[in-house]
Length: 200
Image 1: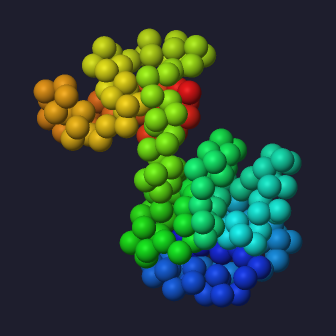
Image 2 (image 1 turned 30 degrees about the horizontal axis):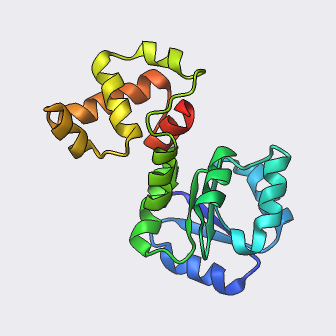
């Protein structure tokens, strides 16, 4: 069981975060110094930060290159531009602070597996941004992959799901999943978001 650290200056938001947490233990922080002191002892803790009230502190961490390892940012009105900025600076999750409990649970599980979590519109935007565009720096990475794996990557960059990729390539979804797992291992990434960020 993991301890989730909620960071906000809004008492009501801390209570909302608490209501979503069923499985893990949690601690509330309404003071940056207390949070940072706790993180010195438990640096891999998952932090859920309320960007509406602690954006100044989060932005200072980013600019000082002191971003905690497992930082999730939530805000009442998430935007694609903010999400892209935060993800490019190592944030592990970004979404709506009032998300449904099922999505909250998904987010915590994803981040605890060292993966990146975002809401669907942001994920689609990241994929569309990189549609069929692989940076010159990333092209040598493709040499590590088989021809089929390169084809799967192009479909991923086009925003296709595993089922849609299977349909397009005339193979089973299970085979697509095997290709995706192999791609992740060969390129040293854990999820599609990390793959897209690596290749852009």
